[in-house]
Length: 230
Image 1 (cartoon, rainbow, N blue to C red):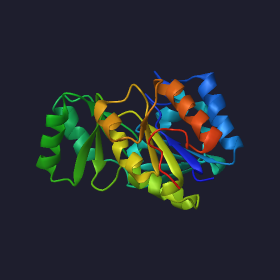
Image 2: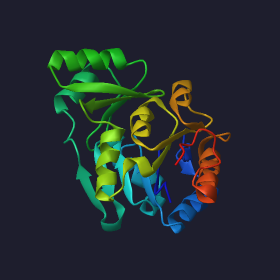
Image 3: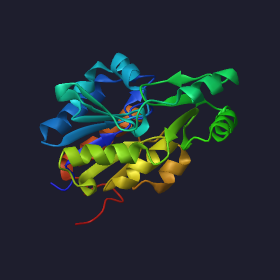
């Protein structure tokens, strides 16, 4: 078995409008049944993720808030990888009229407010950067992203990143897909992700993930165009 784990984004990849189809859940269960590990890698605020996705316990590790939170479902342990968000930044953004969503560690808004976010970061002299997720604009501590969160998760599970298959749909998935041994973009992905992925599925969102899983379970992706050789 070359590929020992599947790492998947949530919104736009596994889920449509926050809902994962029963057929996609069944496919994920079959991945687990094959002896492989499952990792969820999402930009969603952690507490919001728990509300919309009760099946989160299916995963061995969950990287939430774009790499800032690591969750171990078996023991219901939550680990902050970066610390709480800057209260100064949140106040500054609100004073500028920027709509703000605050997670345990992440601050987020939507386009076209990225300019106001950058201005606030510069005014406060904070070591922060912004990452795009389609229409979402996420504020992260410099050096933290989905890849750093996934790296921590695979280390805990004693996995080589080269043995991980990653699948996503948006700009913020680039980093963690580059860490994986094989990268896939679902059909509804942004073009930039499709251009860099090893494989683009025919199906969108969960249907695309199901197709990827079928190939993974059938022959360890040997039949998928672009899969790396032995």
